[in-house]
Length: 499
Ligand SMILES: Cc1cc2nc3c(=O)[nH]c(=O)nc-3n(C[C@H](O)[C@H](O)[C@H](O)COP(=O)(O)OP(=O)(O)OC[C@H]3O[C@@H](n4cnc5c(N)ncnc54)[C@H](O)[C@@H]3O)c2cc1C
Image (cartoon, rainbow, N blue to C red; front, side):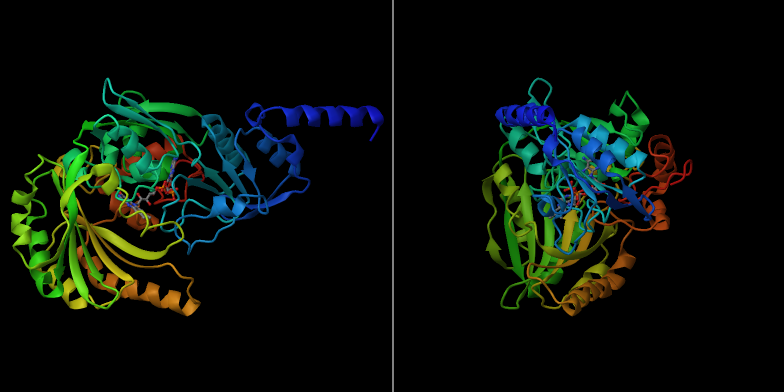
């Protein structure tokens, strides 16, 4: 290097080192020298030139991580530790401009794309092997507008971020039952939670969204502006682009609810299940009941109902009297509790790094036959869960074509999973998966369609699942993602482009 060049380099390095980090868009010293092997949208192999990757890196405010970089393994890890994929690149976006540059880079280089929010995709759709992972998790501020009771949340917010900021003002909207679930993923697919019978699904409370579509355009959509895209976002999942902000309707909500568990012995299981089946749809909207069949560590089967009363304080005993009368409660912890605190109660038992295999679908008619099946098939197994997430109430008063989310007459979402924390042998894993599949073969005939946030399937089943909304979703897909750049989801295939 000539002396003058050396001095310039040394000077610029010294200046850069003296500047606070946020003045630098990217660290110019970390340019990579090699080309990067990658996977295309359709699964083929490609190579990204070093200069293109460097340009992309320099275009971002956030970090661009490659295999071997500090933080790469942390960023590629998603909630379900059974998923182990290595993206070629991870763009840790800090704002919409980073998202636009990432989408453009992916499209121009025909890369496979995964979009990550909270990382809760159980099937691991938010990370991809060899493609570009667009990670929005650093974009997570929430602003509550108390004048019109709305909240604007960045695209990488977790459910708990919204619960918490809204509660500061005595407000709430429907959020998931684990506070570290990503708000964007949950909302775009639908959004069930402890308040959904009172305030409808999370997607029903969506007033607008900022989204970067496949052509790299930043759009602000709502009921009046690009209304078809907005409609599609309410249940159509991640098919249409990367959401960088969501605006929600909030509701006045007493920060203290009456909530807890009612746990019964197995001898009462038929009564309790029968009660849930029969009255699940007729309960007051303010009452939410999620039911679990579980096994204690010492091998005893139990049936538990988590009850949340978000209505008038003091009325909970009246509304729970009939349930309490269905058997002998071994545990009864229903008491006044802060809603935001209760919303975190499952966080640790569902912490990142868990291994889970799950099947789930909607139950419209919780028949006596289904009750019999469940009683017959549930064998003691501490790893096995049968979980029923209640629907009905305000959820069912939204019409099936009013939003892209179609399953409005469901009684509940039935889930069967095995979950464990410890690394397993291949044989154990296969057995645990096979157990779930075997049970599901018996239960599936009782279901009607699935929840795309927990289950994604082939094109034929996805078509059937969206029912009357599918054709309209295809039109939106044709318009906003004709080459199917966003395909790692319950995929709506475009018919217009090469997707
Ligand atoms: C422990 C646990 C608890 C859950 N509880 C509930 C619950 O109470 N209620 C409920 O309805 N569901 C629940 N779910 C399901 C949950 O809604 C879905 O897994 C949802 O996709 C998670 O979103 P995420 O951002 O955390 O996931 P990610 O894995 O980050 O993303 C999943 C998918 O969402 C899309 N996506 C994520 N972020 C964006 C974005 N910014 N822009 C565009 N697309 C995006 C992408 O298609 C991505 O593949 C739960 C899941 C888990 C694992």
